[in-house]
Length: 74
Image (cartoon, rainbow, N blue to C red; front, side):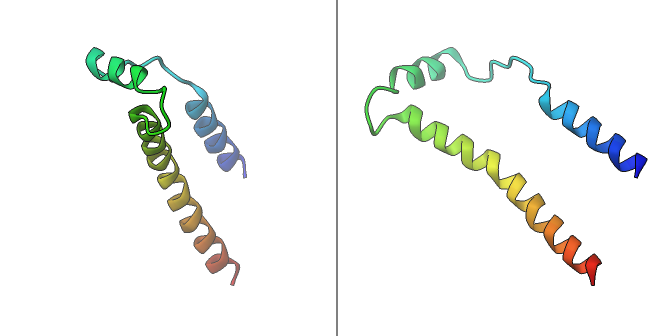
């Protein structure tokens, strides 16, 4: 149990630490910032894409974890 708690605390700490990253080139950043005004904006589409990419690993981990839990429970 102690190993699980230590692993969980390390993973939690690592996920809470955020570093400032400037991954976009200046032209891409300016294009996205200027395109946030309208309803069919490029920036909103980019933000939706980022959210989909962010959610996919968490959903995969949840599915695998749930399957593992129910298989182990039997």
